[in-house]
Image (cartoon, rainbow, N blue to C red):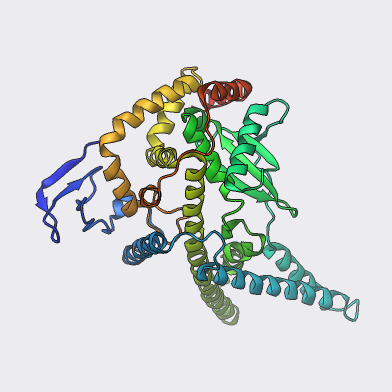
Length: 425
């Protein structure tokens, strides 16, 4: 992976020498001219038509940059009623009312003048309401729930970070084998779940672990619309409805049965139009909701910096920026039978090797990861956001002795992860 001048080309605006990395089209590292270029070979298609994907990429890039500039200028409001959040919650409430009305209508068809010929239609309406109902979520089957008595040092650290950022402690702390971590709420009572991927956790140095916890726990207080119970219909309901009405060819009527054939054709046309309409509205609602979700991610990063210090929060984002490389070296070490001590050494070497090209990788992430459907802002902008704000020192310090105690408590879980990675290839 080489950062190089782009064949002596210069920027059309500031005359600086352009750069390129990973075979990307060159851009200006100074004024970021040409950074918004759409490169279909570097990103998966979103709609399947290149001319649409090109325009939605340009729109997403502009919205992402405008949001970043606005948040830098105005600050990040932890609970401010952003327009995107208001639209998402309002749409969700309307959809939820619609499902309740469908269910009520189904009950009326079943019980009205019972028994009657309307019963099948009532049962169908009730079935539709059940399919479209909001989901409360459940614990991931791949997660292993930890016990406070067996991992007290980890729980103490989680509690300390939660207090530092003003977040409630999670009800469940779990681990899995992913190079990732997440916080979510599940069930009707919205139990708070923190799940830590051990390959990522074991590869991180001490303060970046604090930053990781700070970011994830921040999702319990940053007003993320994706985690609110009332907003689930906006993200899922119309997409499910579009799938339900999309026509499926099960058999073909003979051409001689002209009336039957015409009726089937007309029904298919109506279904396709309705499915496209529902899907279009679904896409718009998701894109609007994710604007506010990205604002919440910036706030989670700010709270991570508050807990671990700005430097550790930026370093964590750089680690995620080269996540594919980091995951590769961790899995290589795990297949060789090594545990977290070796993972950290190998990961540190990978970060050191990537150091000279990190500024370019941060910029290129804007081109590669700007999307109307991205749940997170590009890592480069997330790191830049922290650097634009007043530098913070760590509120929670994790020393080496405490880190080693935590890893000792997690030893059997690390062993299981090593086995699973080794057997999984």
